View 1 (cartoon, rainbow, N blue to C red):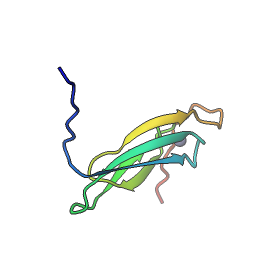
View 2: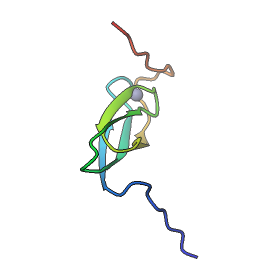
View 3: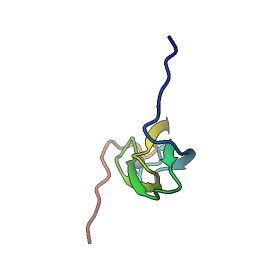
View 4: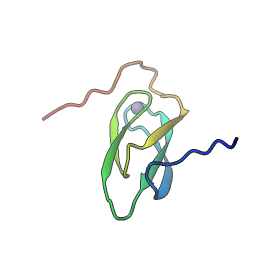
Length: 81
Ligand SMILES: [Zn+2]
């Protein structure tokens, strides 16, 4: 039997890479975008948890490409002002 993964939302898949400005980790972001339903969804750095936002119709999938480079183990803390 063929194993097919049916996406819940049909749209274009936007794949991009970015580096975390906090810990230096590098990761790939897979965001599904439906033109008629513009959205901003948050995704977190897999290493420190710092949140970023991308235009996507569902929570983007994040794949770690390179571990953090700051040599720490702490989690990013959002500072509220
Ligand atoms: Zn990070």
